[in-house]
Image (cartoon, rainbow, N blue to C red):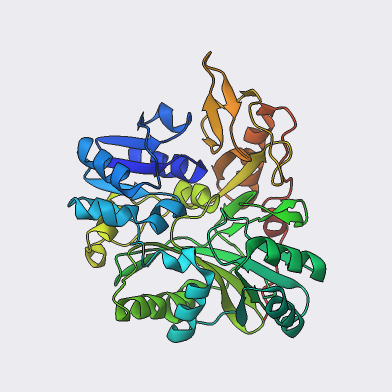
Length: 415
């Protein structure tokens, strides 16, 4: 099949690697793609969040499947426009993508479905925000109600900082803090059938020891050696299937990738957030371990045939990815710096571009990441950091503790 991949970040580079590795795929076209994807796929220019432009490109390239990576195109209705052309699209409708596009809507769905999650209030002014902060207490959790590229959440002990973030966003969801290790679970679904992928853990804070501001993600690893053995089954039973049933009941079935962000609390797993697409950088590690052909899996979800899909197969071992960020990230990343050492297997491009002379330049906050597998988590961690050490980018920074707590056995799941 011919696959059109929409997007141009690290998630899409990881997806492209998975798609070209599927024997059923005869060609991948990425739009707009990035220099890393250019090595394995044809690139085309497109305004990714323009439904009519993406749909027209899908027709032009005779795509059999369109895989939509980022959230903004999904919320804009790109999947709807592609399906209207009679082409299979992996990604939810605009209505269903509201699970990510509006934190308030996601809370409404969770409440209606009986999904365990944090108590929360939607606030639109300083007075209601202050009341909610005082009700829940510190640490304060304030989330931009809309899309914010993974950086709309502030978790802080500083009440004034929480109020300032709310004022900057306008409409926010204020939540009680959920204490416990965090887990990312990707679930491929056609709206009824659902297949969970391997749980992963990512690292949102910019600095070692989970210090500094939140980011789009500074690294990830999978699998989770400390996760309770029945965790995935419990989440599928108590979270995923009730959520999918509620979406069907409302006439807006969710088909695509449901991302469930969880905290493992003393009261059990609680949902922190839903996303409507693969997470970045967790995609890099989860897909590195997936042995099942990716395009066939996504096509089954896009065509309502997931129930007939064979059980998923996974490679032995573990995977780790470490993000290399630009100077100034996340507040004001510097771009345009020359990158060297990025032409090796395992380097995933996220925010890069080619100069007119062919030089590779930084073009975003999260510039690239080193992704490696190994027979165990420690070996994968060593290999990922070896990749990162080979990259040269002026002023860049990365965390040095990705997967360290898991490798050292320092993660405790509450009883």
